[in-house]
Image 1 (cartoon, rainbow, N blue to C red):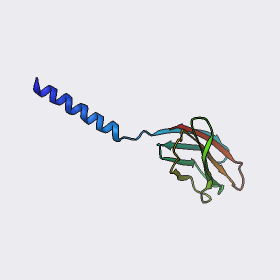
Image 2: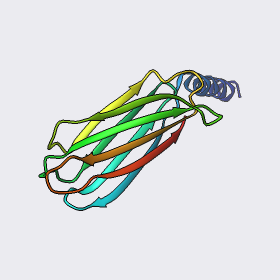
Image 3: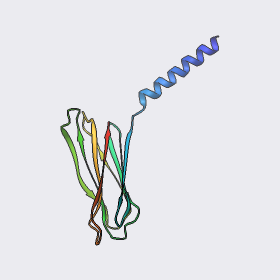
Length: 132
């Protein structure tokens, strides 16, 4: 009986310590078909401190650039931070970035992922959203 009580106590302590030191992360992924670029995919992940993004397309022979921008809202829906549009080099198919140092009171992040500025094809965008 003593052994099983020790196991339960040790297990409970381990679970508590993991929950105290873990950081929740949230993610959203959106895709759409495009003319000339294949599939445009936007991925937004967020913790309480950082929002990270990936924008990619299946192909980019048109020498377009990929882009990302974001806005951060508080629980009342007011915008409390923004990351202006950031563009990749032309012709790449995957673009990574982050919005580091989200302010206190951050509740949600909205992301816009795009492909634009090519020689032949039009611009496309997908929109992502995560609650923190």
